[in-house]
Length: 160
Image (cartoon, rainbow, N blue to C red):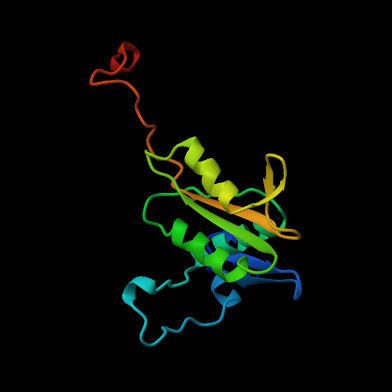
């Protein structure tokens, strides 16, 4: 444990380094951030303790073959953080990445075609990532509204 835990609000502010067997501030687990010359403002991703922590947990879970559901308020950088993590750490000869953006118009058939189109056919009606690769499907915005199928008047049950 750190000598002075009162310097931190909680243990979530710290990362346990198994190699050195010490507690480290999340900001000390990455090299100092430097702004790239000539880059646009929209391309800046400034690491903060929360984004570093979420990236590490996300990376650990994906590497362990676990599913991840990341939730939080709008505008907190979840999509950018995941896209950046997948591009930098999981876009290689070991992984196949598929990015899906859902909307109210997205159908199950469209989703199936997108996923199957990025996979290899293994046998009749069985698809999967290329040999010796792990497939990662990133679905952005699961909270899109369901497409309504009624006419101008909603069903009576929805009016109550």
